[in-house]
Length: 180
Image 1 (cartoon, one colour):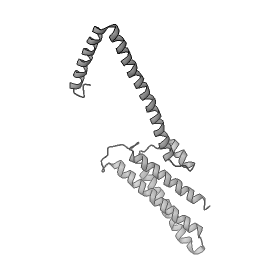
Image 2: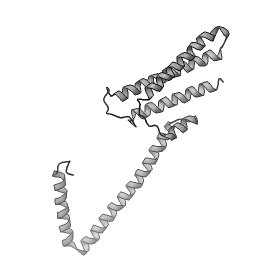
Image 3: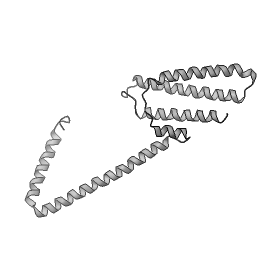
Image 4: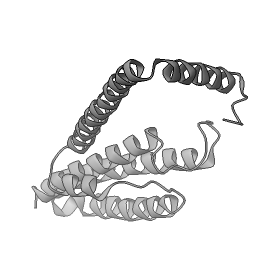
């Protein structure tokens, strides 16, 4: 039984960390970055409630590990406090709209660090970005090569093309942002 309490406590701590990280990144939180935003205040209250719950679980672990008949009343009081805090947490959590990816929850359940998920997602984004950059560079190279070949074959048409392109670029720069 001693093993179950620390694991649930560390799992709860990891869940709290994942929720806080999701909130910090703005993932799933409605509203702006204003400190008076009700959803952020509610999130702060939920986070504080999670911390209080973790403290109560730690105290319960200590009471249970050194249980004697004299410590029965404090144990019951802490159990009642835990139930009340869990009820408070549930009521507060209903007002939060934070979406935690299922992969993060599964990693936490497996006892792994949720930062692994973040690292994997970032590495995947970097790899996709490199692929996209390679494609973009290939198209730029193809365009340059085609312009060189067309310039050899049709020099006057390419000059007209470049003038039209320069004119359209100048017009788009001078346009207001809402028109572009």
